[in-house]
Image 1 (cartoon, rainbow, N blue to C red):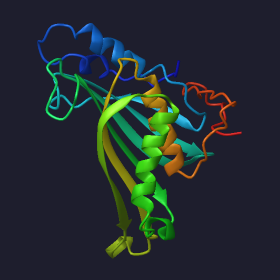
Image 2: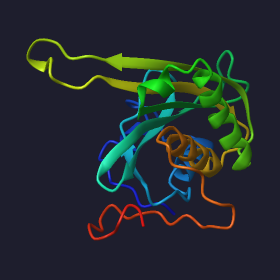
Image 3: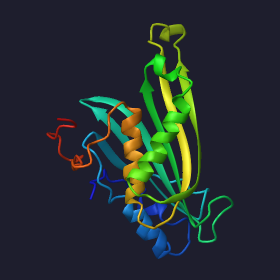
Length: 211
């Protein structure tokens, strides 16, 4: 089980306003977000969930580190509507966001979009996370400084936004796939199949992020 940084908003994201307690199916799915085994380079935390996209929602965030450098960040949002919504193909929907710094020559590659999208689909397949109705976008962003920020270096980033409908309530494989996607975007290769992932505890300052 992955240790999370606690958030006082997590429980309130389970229900909205004066609604009754969340349905058991949503509660089980939301709890499974915490059950994924992820790499030691990744730190997970609870985030406030958006409350207007579906009757029930939950969210987690992640950062990928090498030593003390943050290489990529992301969010994963779980939406649940017992009646489903158009295009969902089921009551659940996952919405993912990943942003990572990249070298300019990489972001200028015309194949970056298809390759980045394949990182997601192949990660879901590798984690045996069944899904349907996937869609998303890949964006290259260039940031330049002006005025008193004119001396700031030009930075280039990759942003991937995607959503898909999980086929099961246990979302741990989907979380693991999303974390694998962030590592690939950060330039960290996948772990060999026979190497176990050992999550880093956020409350252990002596733990190394990488070995």
